[in-house]
Image 1 (cartoon, helix red, strand yellow):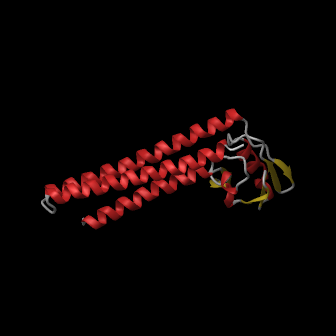
Image 2: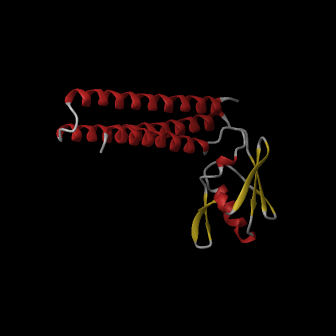
Image 3: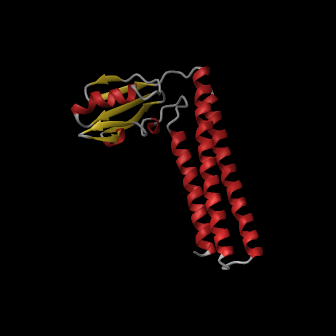
Length: 186
């Protein structure tokens, strides 16, 4: 395994931790309607569990309203249940094959809960990043032990890995700060 492939792999995996973190944050409600709010929800359809966006279209007709157009009439009840039971505090209104979902105003207590959840997601992303760093350091030690790289080169690369880790964690913190201000903005 070459040094560049190790560094590329670490960068790719750390970027993956950031994109997973962003995806999880997308599921947190801020007060503005967003189709990404319902994307993580799953529903049982035709004998398997699928994401809602695989059985319906999700749109945002108004700033505080989501609209879900279910493709199959038999799925309307299941989609409605999935939204109602999601823990997002949403109450869909069924209108034929369409569901209208008004987004209630977030109260202070709920905003603080969402911020706590965002912090948990951020910590998971930081931990994933540190695991990637540990794997990189282990690979580096293995290369050094096998004599493929010298001690000085290993030290320099470990500093690069640490720098990459610090940058990734700083990015996670920035993304968290933006989401936190979005949630707390009334």
